[in-house]
Structure formats: structure tokens, C-alpha cells
Length: 94
Image (cartoon, rainbow, N blue to C red; front, side, top):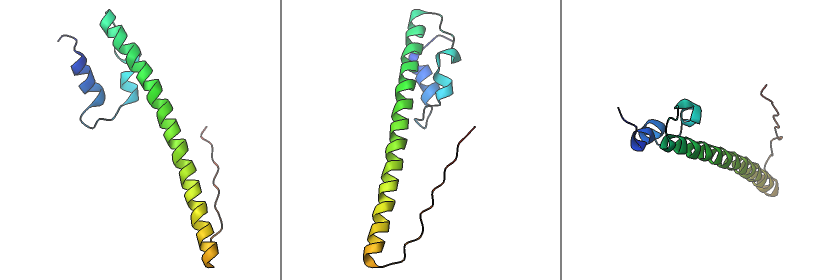
């Protein structure tokens, strides 16, 4: 079987369009030629960019949820409805 970028794209992206990050690191497919090494570098750079984008998205989503909850609490207070106590959960993964 010969090397094909299209075959690798299907392997990496699959039918769902999701990126399994572990599969597209340069160590997952030994790069033997210049085209393969260039592809591995490009994928690694794309993974890093995607990772950064996903972190920004998660941060913005958390900030949006906090702001939305604050708005709901303020609206309930203005209407004179009971406002439940806020719950803050802090955890760390070790």
C-alpha cells in the first residue's frame, strides 16, 4: 500500500469529522520521506492550534455560563422571587 494524504485524512478525521488527537501526532506514523515529515509537522502544528482554540472556547463558555447565571439571579431578585444560594465547586485533578 502506498502513502496517500487522502488515506491519512480519512484515518485521522474518520466519518464523524472529529480529530482524535492521539492519532495525528508525529510519533503515530513514522515519517520516512520529506512529504511524510512535512505532513507530520503540519498535523502537529494544527493539533497545537486546535488545542489552544478548544481551551479558549471552554474558557469563554464558562464565562458565558457564569454571566448568564448572574443575570438570572438578578432578574429573580428584581421580581421578588426566591433566589437559591450560589454553589461554588472547586476541584483539582491530580
